Amino acid sequence: MKVAVGPDPSLVYRPEGHPEAAKDKGSFRNYTVRTPPTLTVVLDPEPPTPASSPLPGQHAQFRSFSYKRMAVLEAVDMLDRLVDESDPDVDFPNSFHAFQTAEGIRQAHPNKDWFHLVGLLHDLGKVLALAGEPQWAVVGDTFPVGCRPQASVVFHDSTFQDNPDLQDPRYSSDLGMYQPHCGLENVLMSWGHDEYMYQVMKFNNFSLPPEAFYMIRFHSFYPWHTGGDYRHLCSEQDLAMLPWVQEFNKFDLYTKCPDLPDVGQLRPYYQGLIDKYCPGVLSW
Image 1: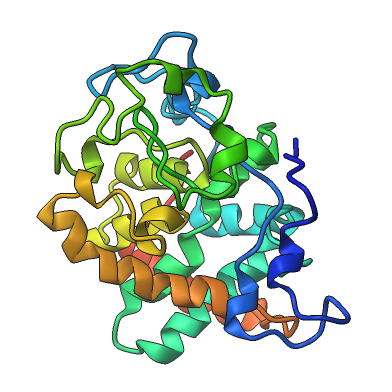
Image 2: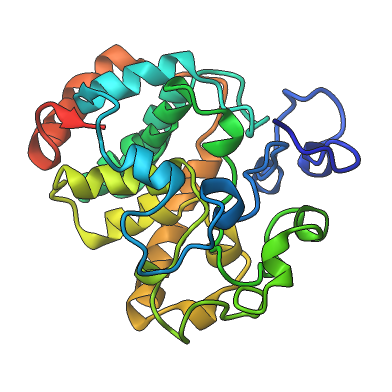
């Protein structure tokens, strides 16, 4: 499912000429696929609450972690079969993007091996698209639901104009169903590969630092880490972690290139990190 909103928005960011021409960093942020606008519409006919348990819809379906049992590199291998339709910057399988991101981090931060692993892990939630979920429900930017979408949410005006949540006073204010500075851990985010992988990491007790969990969960939350919005929901912990998410995103965006890494040569190094931080066969 694609949302048609005038001309292909990727053209705004691409340089003139051939689409494979060299691009500066500003040209890498583009997409045509959108996630649906709110959790209330996407996941359940009844409005959710922060305290709802179990969470409805996709949350209930995929947080049972009964989809598959596999090790991390098996999940990476699954992404050999996935090209992210939301990212016209690359036309190669997402598995290569995982290694490109990880190697970019490794070069810039050689002493932070956990950070290298985050680069490899960050998009593994996209296995949902291989489990039968449509890509529009897996990829693309994320944002909080249950409150008024901020102006920096992509396609803000056209996407939300008919959304029923915005006609409900409980969800149509800046705070919506939340309290000021309640913390992002208490906010329901739109469903996608970020949220799913974050939940996989928690369920399987990955021994990574908190910074890693923030990077995975919020790397597609562009209205927050790039747009500067939603600070009224943030705790001090969220704001302390924000620079880490921004640091990670430099490598997520700007390591994309047609020169694909030698995956066979890199696998032993990353298997060592997996054995250290998230070993064995995991529940997905």
